[in-house]
Length: 403
Image (cartoon, helix red, strand yellow):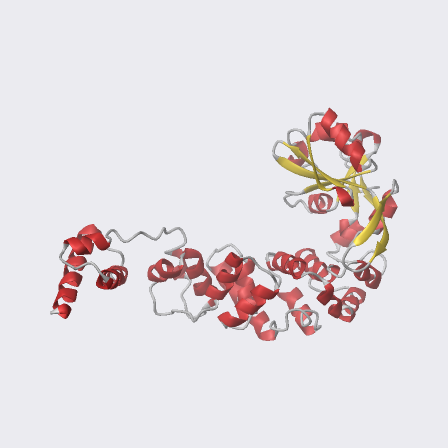
């Protein structure tokens, strides 16, 4: 008996039935595919919905327009149109077969053969289709059984699938971390190790994107340990070694203890040697955004263990303070609770107030204001009355120094 996709709330989102009718899903021309089917079978939340169809892109666009559905040609060169229903994007891709591949990109042709489309996908658990109305699963390669066994397995031979797209090496370990039992398929692991150098041919943006997705998994430690032990990361990230795996494992325990959401960038910082210069080099190599680079560099600055939590958060921001405190095993986790929802205040006084107290305009104003702020922070951000007293004392101090 064929497996059935469990019914779920996402299947009844407004506008979806109209989209399926436009694509003639009831006549077998369109099916759910990939993550929505896989996660649906596991009764996990479904956020991204993909539909496969025998209709070619131009026909998809025409049908959507006729139905009054917004169509965006997000990946039309690869057969993908994005439909927008009730603000929800749904990717619709024409069935494809590979004409040629070079490990980075593929030349494709359209097909009407569902098995041919499935055979070009990476893992058996991602090559599952579901009829939107009967919910019957089409499974050509044993993906349902693999999903039940928590087994991540390439379609066909692992070496061939990796040769088609080298990024599948990193994807394998991400899917192993999320859906597997941390025990790799022997053929897949050997193929990933043998092809590790091919990662150097990929764009650093693709590597960074896949690595951060892996680090977003609840617990990626076992998969990353396999990658380090197998020399898989060494060609592109030689800075990550077993000590980095140990730091990541410790960080994840502290994230859980502090009831703090995982952060892929914080976890990347844990994997790297505790040196902001290394973080800067890795961030540049992976072509991370300036904001992301600054975050991992800040996380790896020498930790100000003795500084009170709110003083640290005032100096480097709440996000940066939480990163540093989680990465510093000497910090009590209770310190994090006091700043998680805290909004750092602004010093309730400016340079003009110091001048009005008799401090001459000039460089001393900025120095004195810095002194006022330092004392204000040290005293735990007292109210405006106390700040006025600090200002009076500071101005008097500077005036005496000028005499």
